[in-house]
Image (cartoon, rainbow, N blue to C red; front, side, top):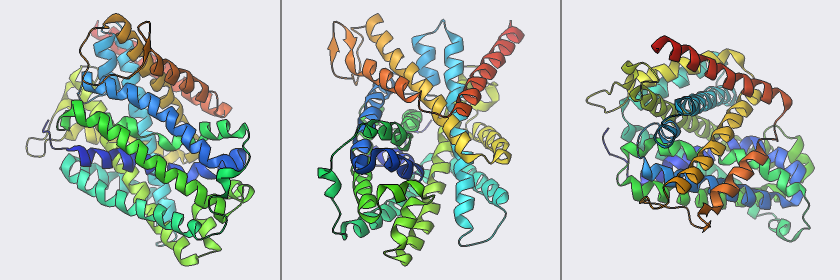
Length: 420
């Protein structure tokens, strides 16, 4: 595939996916448990995300191919084909769930400006950005830059309104509680998205250098924005009111500036649209990698000659995303998406540990720093934190998540027997 993505465009891809719609949905719930320590919860969640991001950076520079987690498992555990199939399917599932749920959120936000059937709007959004991604990764990259700047401007407006309040910054000196750790486990989901960027490694210029840089820079930028947003939110509303609000950022602004609150609602359209576009893009690249590895029909590895895009894989992802629209259980589907992503995070960190022990002298363009007696400390810590976060979901999410894992394993066995 054509290498057309430089460092700046990669940073915008990662930043756009992380900022996305996550902060709009989790900040209120996190404020309810972390209280004035909300800002510290964002910092702790950022550290947790950074630890796993470092593992992704190491593996993406060793195997800079479309397919990411699927490719990593196939290369590191060649005898455990079921593991690569499971990771690839779970990440496709996570991406299409994100695309579907956020497309429904886009349709809901649109009702404030234009009344239209939400299901049809969501379908149209998925179709539009599938076509944009087929058009070309560079073209979708420029659109992502524009959308990211718009959504960033909305958060800057929110921070500015909070900065004008006399209470801004007082939370920094407030006493902290253990709720900060629980808040971090909720906020961690606002950082999900950085892992999707490694699916663009094959289309990146100098991926050995630019992928790790883009991951780290995007996490630093988004953390700075998130901490400022949390301080502004605490200055505009008390934690109890933040917890009870369904549209936290808009309602926090409403008392102080109705015009700014309405503007933020419009900017949310760009945030949700951008998330849909990048999620569809990431899923199509995983599908491409699995087709190349013959775990999906080979036809889905087809590349459009002029546009250099996996058009059949993109259409497959679009069709799968449509299947989830009738469910309309946004919270549950989004949580299941996060659940399976964290499961894969644990596997990715374990893969880094295993490969370090198996091939300690292998040349690595990027290496996660710090090791004790040959054991990489940070991936071990990252896997432990991800495991901790895995126990912070509602009961229903576990049933659905485990059901998905079992379904994928059954499909694998059926395909394996058919080939045999």
